[in-house]
Length: 213
Image (cartoon, rainbow, N blue to C red; front, side):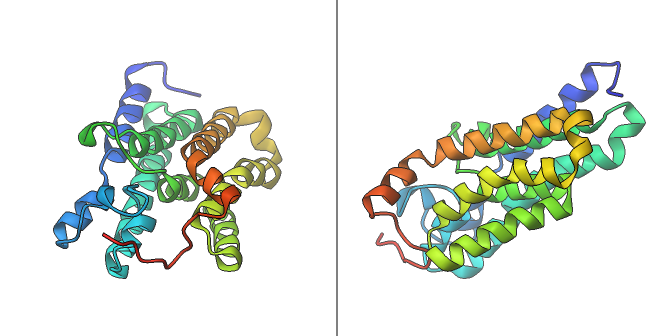
C-alpha cells in the first residue's frame, strides 16, 4: 500500500529526478580532460558518444555511472521505502524520474542524453533478471549489426514485454511498474527518431567509429 502522506512519494520522485540530472558524460569528460561530448559526433551526452572520443575508459566509466543513477533511486525505495509506506508504484516512478532527469537535466539546461544506460539501471533495480534480459538483447543486436541505436530501440521495445511475460502477476498488481516501463520505452524511441531516420538512409554511425573533432 502506498504512503498515506503524499510528501514521501513526491520526495522520492524529486530525488530520482535530481540524481538523474547528473550528466556523467559531461562530468567524466571534463574530469579526464576530454572534449565535451556535446560538441562532436552525435553531440549526445552519453557513453556511446564519449566512446567516439577514442577514450574507452571514459566511456566505460560514463556507462557505469549513468546506469548507477537509474539503479540507485529504485533500490533505495525498494529497500527503505516500505518503512514509510512507499510501494512498487513509487519505486517505478522514482526510476522513471531518474530517466527523465537524464533526458532533461536541470543542471545542464535540460539538454541531456538518450537515456539508454540510465534505463538499463532502472531495469536492474526493478529486477536483475529484467535488466539482464534487456541487456542481453542490446548486446546481441549490437554484436550482429554494430548499431548502438538499433540495439537500444530493440531493447526498449522488449523491456515491458519481458516484464509482463516474466511475471504475469505484475500485470494485475504492479500496473505502476508496467506504466513506467512503457513510458520509458516510448521516450527512448522518441529520443532516437533522428537515429531511425539515419538507419533508414544508411547513414547511421557504427559502434567503434571514432568521431572527427
